Length: 226
Ligand code: ADP
Ligand code: ADP
Figure 1 (tube, protein in one colour):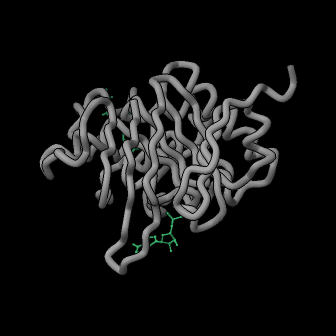
Figure 2: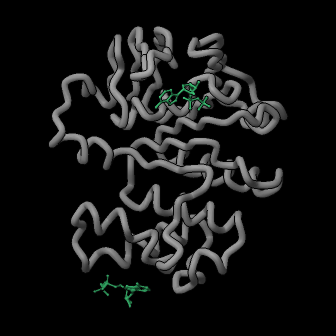
């Protein structure tokens, strides 16, 4: 589903954020990406979204080599990928419904089916009753769940998350992980960047560890409570 072959990324200022990474994530896997701030986690996610180009090596997503993708194909590529951010990036002057509907509007999804899709996504994150509220009327945990509903409303095959629990307390963080596992259980391939090692360990999933742009560990951990 996602393959990195000897991928390096040097930014225009000369800084090498990734130094020759190779790994593969299979369809249906749930994988954590860890490492200190500055290790290269966001850069790696941006390469998958074709927001940055590798300066060496190849990134393949769903068998498409992103080095060879045209500008015209990029929107179609991104539509297969849902993204969850730490600061959820909601539009505060739009309702919850409108925020979640936004990716469908952008992709030209048939209007008559939009309501059903948006409600299905809101239902999955337990926020159906809040569709007419505005983001600032919701708690931080609820806002993050709106961000997740928006990320999955296009039914992407891949879900990326960049520090999705960065601003949340442990109980809310555990809720978000529970939601992610539910998406994974219905076949969504997940890659979640986080530096919360305790939270990651409790999930019992594969962990890729970055240090200063290098892949220093790739472990398949056993579940903690069996
Ligand atoms: P992480 O997500 O693990 O914190 P990042 O991928 O954001 O790491 O950053 C990795 C390194 O690349 C950092 O040292 C950062 O300062 C640098 N970096 C990120 N984006 C750019 C950029 N656009 N130009 C130059 N350096 C960058
Ligand atoms: P349909 O034509 O199948 O009803 P629509 O996309 O027009 O599909 O709307 C589906 C439902 O979503 C309708 O009940 C409508 O009132 C509701 N809806 C549409 N836009 C919004 C919105 N911005 N906020 C809340 N509810 C909305």
